[in-house]
Length: 234
Image (cartoon, rainbow, N blue to C red; front, side, top):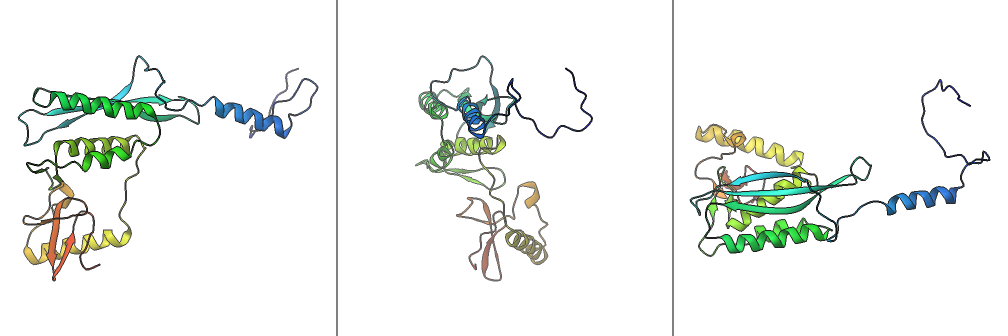
């Protein structure tokens, strides 16, 4: 028999044929069964025919040709409350074949770690800790890259932040206010306009050991980073 509902539905229960409501144990068993049906990332998970991905361009003074880093993601449990986006594979392409062997090896290892499941964020620091014995280079904006592998780690970090696996470490209000005050004071004393918003920092700024950016300025005998707020004076 149909029954008209005049009020907004705020919840529901499954009723048995005899009109009884399911017991608490039955509800718990049903929730446990739903959780068991949640697909987790593991190495036996088959690759779908289509994956969502992003491609990042890397240009460095170490190579005449750019590198293109592609990271493809798999969406698990789509359309449910357990939906999550996880990296599944990485590819790197370039016209420069000098690095072909180690690039193929690196992408295969990283892709294998992706498919293994679990926490993959540790790879960011592992890659960024690789130093080139011939020296690194500075990106536009003054950020120091110790090696090409470290920049690949930088790309991976950006991608993990984009899909929500890594959270960006925000500056607290004290650090934000300190950076604003130091930037204004430096501009007033030197006549140099603020360019930090465009990714550039004052010429002659020193390298900050914390964020690896040439943004350390000297004011009143105190070194302060205009990028991350690091200060030698506490």
